[in-house]
Amino acid sequence: MTRINSKAPVTTAPPEAQAAALAHRAERIVTDVDGCRVVWRRFGEGQPVVLLHGGHGSWLHWVRNIEVLAAHRAVWAPDMPGFGESDDIASDLSVMTGTLVKGIRQLPGCDGAVSLAGFSFGGLVAANVAASLGTASRLALLGSGGHGGIRRQQRALLDWRQARDAEALAGAMRYNLEAFMIADAAKVDAMAMYAHTESCRLTRFRSKNISRSGDLRDALDRFGGEVLLAWGEHDVTADPVPAIAAMTQGNPRREGRVITNAGHWVQYEAHAPVNALLDGWLPK
Image (cartoon, rainbow, N blue to C red; front, side, top):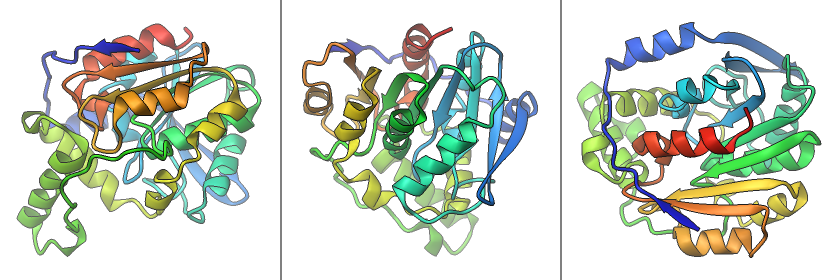
């Protein structure tokens, strides 16, 4: 297990313009699985990697990572079913897994080896997709749910749906980001606020109980391939060192990383070292 320093400059930009410009550079593809339409965005060319966001998320969970990863490969960033622009499904892990597996098989260039990366709830989903897809090559999990181990959350989240006006909504979103997602309050910038707020507003899938299950290791065993597991050292959803030990169990095909100075949304708060890690580990 290696510790990676995450102290790096953070670049900020007007969030709506940044997100719109990034989306404009994507090829937007909609798959249809049993009547459920899933919206995918593709960036770049080459070996495909699918990025699966977390609960109360959307493709914007990867807003600080897409450009770096797409420089050397084809990046597919969907809104998973029940999130963002995609259609609803039952809040069931097997239904989510099956819908995504069938959707990936419809994507151009994804008929061969495919790598996956998942964040939080999306980590548990990615592990199950990798176990079911049959062509998954590598699997990177960031702050993954499903480990079933210790959680370190100290502050209850605010119900942002009760906000009376825009100011109250912004206050609730900032509080929740600081309590749950980002360890350094100074890194809760305009883009973090925008991405988190927009994603929360468009979330319908209920992922909390699924994420808190202990099903991740079973999915990793069924996958059997190369796995990278990384947690921010201050992630409130896990204690990284024992979580990594429990998920790797000395398996030489699984490796763990603790990203220093970072919380749960590790690929945002520590985007520079996480981008370097993923870019070096994922196929090109």
